[in-house]
Amino acid sequence: MYTATFTIYDDLNFFLSRKQKNKPITHQWDWKASIKDMIESLGVPHPEIDLLLVNDVSVDFDYIMQDGDDVHVYPMPYYQTHPHDNKIQLIPEINDRSRFILDTHLGRLASYLRMMGFDTLYRNDYPDDELAEVSNAEERILLTRDVGLLKRSLVVHGYYVRNTNPRERLHEITERYNLAEQVEPFKFCLRCNGNLHEVDKADIIDQLPERTAEFYDAFHQCDSCEQIFWKGSHYDRMEKLLNEVLEK
Image 1 (cartoon, rainbow, N blue to C red):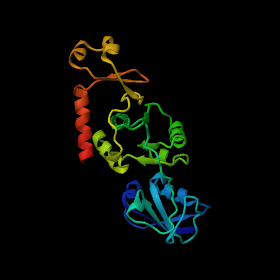
Image 2 (cartoon, rainbow, N blue to C red):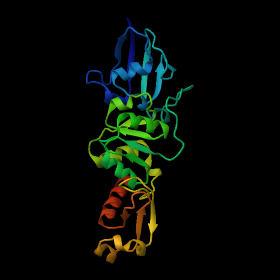
Image 3 (cartoon, rainbow, N blue to C red):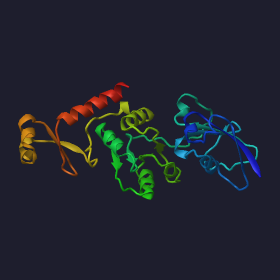
C-alpha cells in the first residue's frame, strides 16, 4: 500500500467533501496511478488545475504517483499571481477569441454570452460524448454543471459553473475568463448562434408586427435562422444587464 499527501488550494476546495476542505489529505492506493487519476478520484476535475507540484517540482498530468509524494494542487489562473520556476503548462492557452459550448443546464447563460458577442454553442439535447468531442476539436471552453463531464480525457478547456442564478453565472464567467475586454454586443443570434447582419427595413417589412414597423427603422437578421432583431424593450433590458456586468 502506498501513501501520499495532497493539499488542494483555494477554489478547488469546492469539489472536496466537507471533511477534506482546506487541509492536507492523506490518500492511499495499491496500483500504478497517474496524478491526474488520483486527483480526480478526490473530486477535482483536471481542466480547472493550473499547477501541480510534487515534492516542490512541477509535473504534468501523466506523472506516476510514488510512495511518500507530497502533492500541491493549484487552481487556474494561479500562475498569474504565483509564478513558479520551470512550471509545466498543464492547459494550453487559447490564443483566439474565447468560444464556448454549454451543457443542457445552462441555456440562459448561453443566450447571455451570445448577447455579449461570444460564439456559444448550446442545445438542450447535447450528449456528453458530443460536448467533449466538440470542445476538444474546436478548442471551445466547456461550461457545465456536470463534474463527471469535465473529467473526460478529451476535455482540455472547461469549467464547472458554481452559481445557480443565471445573472450571477454571467458575472462568474465574465470574471473567470476576463470577458469584459472582449465584448462585442449583439454579434450573434440569441436563438441559434448565427451571425447577425444589418438588413433594410423595406426588405423585411412584411415580416414585422405592425407597431414594430411603425416605430423602428433599424433591424438585424440572423444569417442562419433568419430571426429579425430590433432595439425594442427586450434590447433595453439586455443592454442594462450588459452594463451591469461590465461595471461589476
